[in-house]
Image (cartoon, rainbow, N blue to C red; front, side, top):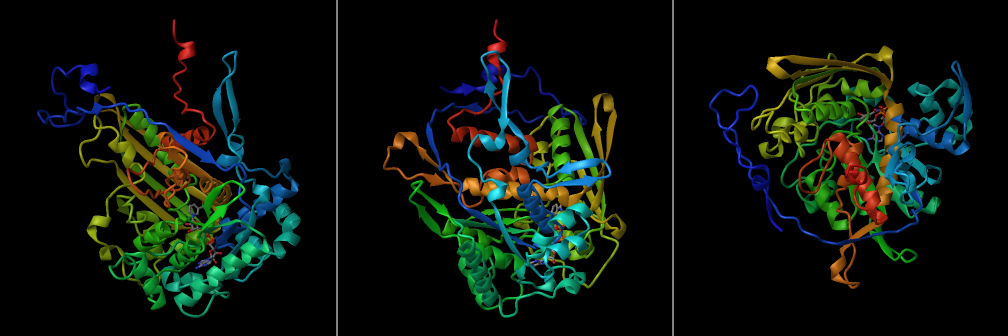
Length: 553
Ligand code: NAI
């Protein structure tokens, strides 16, 4: 059946202008043709989660120590006294552990909600093993003390266990981070880049064997690096990247070495219990730099290894995508978004150098600019060449975190039109991990009116980030257990796994990497995608929210 939308809607009587558009400028007429097709897919999900371990790059940092403490505290059912009374370990802020999904309705028409983690068997946090690397040799108890995120009672209670955990020596090139990070770099690998990759691979294998794991997720939660130069012959293809590492090319970032090590360890394995093939290693980039250079992506595809990028989506960006989605969906036109942040943790200290700050502000140029204007930080350290002019202009697609929302409404925005979007970040040591984010949203309403929202958000950054890190690992593991095939193709047809670039995890990252098709930044669409995928795995259709059973006469 072919449905022509303009047959249903009727032809517009006269051409209308967009709000604020000069009179007489014709509005583009949209005449899509909709062709519904029915295709049955078989979705197969191995029920038993793999024995999984996470290796945190930057284990001794704020996020690394906080996630580790949360895993230990939850496993032990830790309770501690605070001035507000007793507190118990929990996973607040975790999509997989603390949120629910609407399954449907019971016979009385009441909604039935179930924990998201109960729809399909997901990896339990208590079963997750943890290990990692850091340029600082401090054990995790000392690192947690230095980081000043955890309540002192929690630190005391977990001290014996945290003290036993010591990061492995890290691959590190100070040229990619702020010079101020050199002070803590007392635990780094020597040798060439090729030797470092070999050592990182050895570390992954050692962890896997030591804990009898099926699978390892390597998760970069170390400092934001500057962009690596993207150059033909250097990192444009998998072979060129591997050759560049062998030549010890200085423009290969440390984060890319971890990614390459994880990808090379990610060979496919047959799981005879579940009759499944799965990849043994996944790499996730929790920071904004372009770790996953084109050669890295090609290598991942070659090995079938999953990769996820880029940058954790914690507070401000999440709220931004929700607010803009709401405004644009309501037919209100956001015209300017201005964000000021100040933070005083080591992440903020590292971002006080212009070249790392640039990664945070602009995002990975492989998926485009996220920010329209950039204001320099107050502290300027050693001069490093600005990497942006080195990029091919085609790689800069000028998209930002609200782009898909803006582009969804051609009534509000003309071609290429988007709100002004400015972000400022300042390093203020006093506030520590308690980040301040102040956002001003301006929007146009009826009769040229203006609506302005001002949002002030104060929050411990790492307490938001740690549950996200857990979700990334839990969902990444889940993705290795799912396969699809055309139901009509018959039993001889192989199940196709997810593409090596895992777009399903877009909800958790600021600048989602997708293998093809548009990037979705709208938080609700991203969440719905996860929900519907879990539903599909148990044979339930997507939640249409029509609720026709209550609406018909
Ligand atoms: P942090 O500075 O406390 O921790 C980073 C750790 O990485 C440090 O312990 C450092 O010694 C280590 N490190 C640096 N280079 C390394 C290397 N080459 N190999 C191994 N370890 C290395 O930073 P934090 O707050 O934990 O954040 C980590 C990353 O996550 C940053 O890039 C940050 O921008 C990003 N992020 C954090 C969010 C949050 O809410 N905390 C939100 C979004 C992104």
